[in-house]
Image (cartoon, rainbow, N blue to C red; front, top):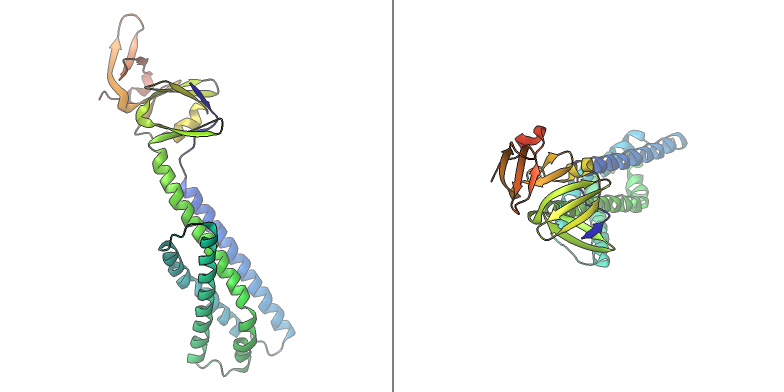
Length: 271
């Protein structure tokens, strides 16, 4: 027998996607407010400042994120570096490269449509553009970290979910070990613990029936009673007794007979 304090749940990827979307929207809102405040302040303190041209420029700058970020993600996923230092070094170097390419693109675009002849825009290209390089660098860096961390987490979560669909992850006294679902016969409720019966013994896990039901894959485990789950692959037969303990019983592969609740009969079939 072994006692455990936790049973890892299946990963809810929808929740992660919602959290990421909210975080990205928050960043965009903050950046938009900063840009708007900056432009408004310059507009009321400098008569030569053109709010319209400034907004056009910022639209070009921040709008290009939609094109460069997917490219960055594709390239980052093609270079699986090992080690924390290598990981951050790669992304730092690549972000600097992206900022340089981005600034070159903006200059070429503005010059190609002959907007550099406008005095106020020329000042953007010579002073403002140079001063905000670090701002764009930090913005790219934030997006890089958020995006790569998210996709890295999704890959790990996906792998962990696949593992958890085949086995229990049990922690005992600082030790981590796994119990394959194929080795589990049935799970019995004992107050605040669940007793996981296997072919070689049992383990106690700290959980409730209600929470456990949301963690177990329904195609593997089925609730047969208010007090226990049964591994469907170990159901040998289902029989009804009219003598002795009456009712419908599930016969497991080890010969054990467990009574099947009336409301749970439709969930089980003999193999």
